[in-house]
Length: 108
Image (tube, rainbow, N blue to C red):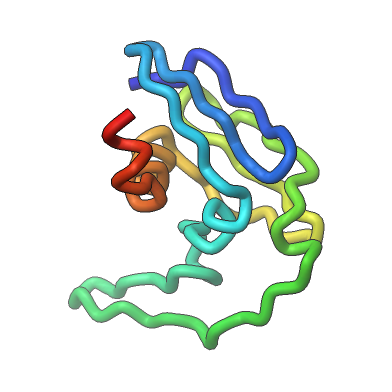
């Protein structure tokens, strides 16, 4: 599913998908779910995942500066602390949205 519109405002990323679904992801959650190897680690050919040490976050870490699209499959946020290596695919954004969705939101 492709996004019809992606807009960052206040402290959330709002996504309206082509199928009509709408998601609101807090920017802090978006940053904490960064899929890059420096944040999530990486897996070798034997399936062992190597995770980096936990990085400290500052207030700037959750400030979204830019949100350029990468091709027709992802966005690559630039955060206030300079971090910009995470490629958030449409599928990854949907997974984050599902993870942060509260039971109260689902019933509405």
